[in-house]
Length: 267
Image (cartoon, rainbow, N blue to C red; front, side, top):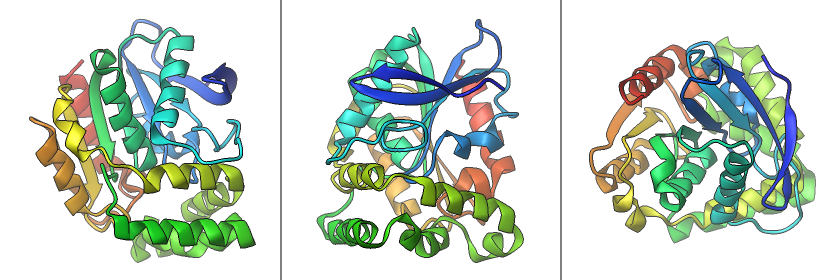
């Protein structure tokens, strides 16, 4: 495993790491959820060892800078775009979960010819207007009480009750990631997420697209995944049983089989 490195891209310092196969292998770029960091993808590393793997911490998370203020989804995609340019990565497979999937959609619209494939896990292309007050409540809670106040309800949404009971250490690790997320980073990204509205633009995405969702995902339920699949011609939906929002962690074996076979078939 390589060490975490830092680079300035799009005016912000971003933490990233490169793992996997030697230089000749195809690139796979992995983008994490809100209130996590690049380590969220640890369960996928062995399964993707034949690829050259770039993981990065989104603006406001992990080792990346957390500027105060409201972020926009296109700004987060611009960060990723600048990082790819800085590292000389021309063509790549993109894998994003939740917020990472939103960044992936925006990036596919931004630099379509560079994306070999797009994998969107447990994400959405839009939130209805009535969802915005929920995000505003979360932002207000974090401002008043800090990130720890979000932990119990977030873990309930992110994992099924059965998983939370059986995998205490794994869940505790994610709880620690939530608490470690800078308040400014959470608020900035939550603002971007709450305003996502890309559905009407998705039909222009032409690269092979795999959409994965946990059957028990409450945050971005299967109906949201179905909407994405209807919008992107030729895309494929896979629903993972007994998984909530972080399906890559709750059911890594199933997730890895789906992802690896899709990447190999399109490499």
